[in-house]
Image 1 (tube, helix red, strand yellow):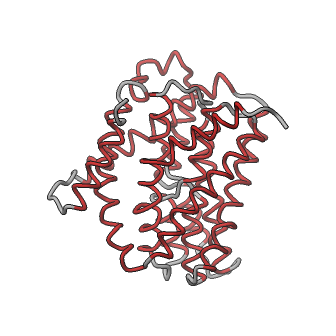
Image 2 (cartoon, one colour):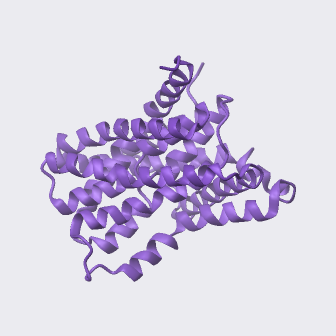
Length: 314
C-alpha cells in the first residue's frame, strides 16, 4: 500500500519550504481552504447530530470539557520542569490543551479512507475543546486578574473564525437535516480530500518556517513537543473508553488530545498574554507536533484503539 496522497502534499510543502523554494500559495486561497474545511466538518457533524442526538451525548460533552481542562494542567508543570518561564509555560500549555482543526480534518480523511466508522458528531467535541484550555492557560499565567481584558478575550474566543465556522456548520446541519443538505454534500465527500490536500501543502510550507525557530530554543522544547502528544493521546484514549466510543471515535479523540492549536489559541493568547513568546508555542505546535501527528501519530493512535477494542475485559 502506498502513502496517503493527502499526507504527501504536506510532505511536499514541508520539503519545499526547507529547501527554500519560491513555492507559495496566495494568502486568500489559504483562507478560503480553511473556511471550506471547517464549514464542511461542522456541516457533516450537524447532519449526523440531528439523527444521532441522545441524552448520553450531554455526559460525553462533560467528559470532553473536563479533558480540555486537564490537559493544560498536565502540560504546565512539564514545561516548568523544563525551565520555561511561567508566562511561556502557561501559553504553550494552552496551545496543547486545545485542538488543531487541521489535524482533525486529516484524521477524518484518514479514517474515511480506511473505512473505519466513527461518531459523526465529533466536530462538536472540537468546538468544546477550543475554549477551556485558553481560560486555564490565562489563570495559570496570571490568576484571575482585573487587568485581563475578559470582554475582548471572550469575543476572540467565542466569535473567532474556527469556532464560528464549526458551530455555524453544526447548527446549519442540525436545522436543515440530511435531505435539505444533500446538494451541499460534496463539501464533505468528493471535495473534502482535494481541499485538504491543498490546505496541507500550505501547512507544510508554514511548518518549515517554524522549524527554523526551534534551532534557537534547543532540545527542551522539541522534547516537550514530542512527549506531550503521547500524554494527550493517552488521555483521549482513556476518556473515549469511558464514553464507550467506537474504534474510530476512540482514535479520533486520541488524535484531538494529541494535537495542539495553531489558529484559535494563538490569537486569544496574544491578547491575554502579550508578553509571551509566540515563536515557542507555534514552533512546538506547528513545527513539531503537527508534522508528528500527520506523518506518524494518527495511524498509531488507530492501531492502539483497535488493540484496546480487541483486548479481553479485565
